[in-house]
Amino acid sequence: MDELQRDLMQERWDLVQNYPSQLRSYVPLFTTYTDAAFPSDLPSDYGLRVALRYEVGRFFASLERFKRAVARKALDEAYVAFADMSLHLDRYLRVGGLYTYYDSTIDNEPLFQPYEDALVYADPVKDPAEVRDLVVLCKGPDKGKTGIVIGIYPDGSNNCVVKLDKYRGMREIRVVPRTWAAKRLGEQDPDDVFLIPRKGAKS
Image (tube, rainbow, N blue to C red):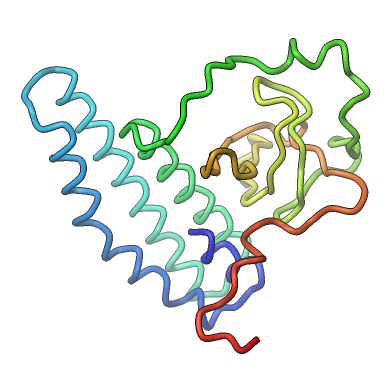
């Protein structure tokens, strides 16, 4: 997914068009893990299997939307479909217990109350972040966390999808109001995905 994000944001349609078939080949992997990790008829296992299969279904429905958007080179639609794919994969990993850590912090906002000036960012109302912008979450339970906008929903909700920066090897996905995702100011390192070398690329 990181390499797909890199190629999509660089509009390498020649490369992006190959991803849907690769991702669809993972269906047996999802199915095998779901059935093997939660095999019993206990209500807890049954409930988790249902939840995981739902996320897999939503992931592949988003993948079909992504495939159609890529065929038309509809960039904004492709961004939204990719964001939904990322969101449902994130939820699958979380529900399936595949995250390598558990963050017991429920709400970061109280932690920042004494340090309101510690975060420096552009006004998210006057200068809202767009896809590819590096952001810091300036409100909400994840206040202070940084990431990149990977999709903006066109449904009037004014929500966007943020891929948080790596923490303990994982990059979580958040859906937040655009007024919570503020563009970072000053010189910033590029998002990690742009540092991934392409296979077969000459140095």
